[in-house]
Length: 196
Image (cartoon, rainbow, N blue to C red):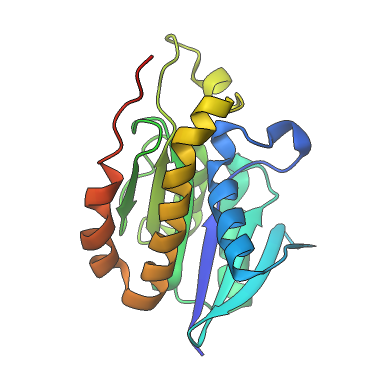
């Protein structure tokens, strides 16, 4: 049976719940809810298992804290003997407006600490789904922004993107990265910036 590892980046603990930096967690949680899968606290992360049309899917929310996310990703790839081409990492992205997203087959970490640590340990050859969180913060205040909580209005803009991200993950598993990028990256740009 083909195995897939879907990783949502974030930080564990109630103080980080619903923060912008935990958008990856939120996407993987939404996928698990739809699949009826529940997370267990296991080595290096919260892990849920499900199947999708005969394919085994592992959902991982690393508990290593963002800057050491690679430890969790490398461990679970190795433990379950999952090919790196079947890894998808979901992260927050300040360079995209809130509600937009972009799927890429590989590439740089874009300054994201979680992606950076994964890259250090396994290289750049893995798919990543970047979820836009916007960058409406003063110079030098990026940390406060990414660790800040979403407002109710923000969540209303974000929710359709999360719902679509669940479909993107399914397509990645069933159709592969290239077809999924072609199909969904146009959609990921259609979100309009909300009026202030």
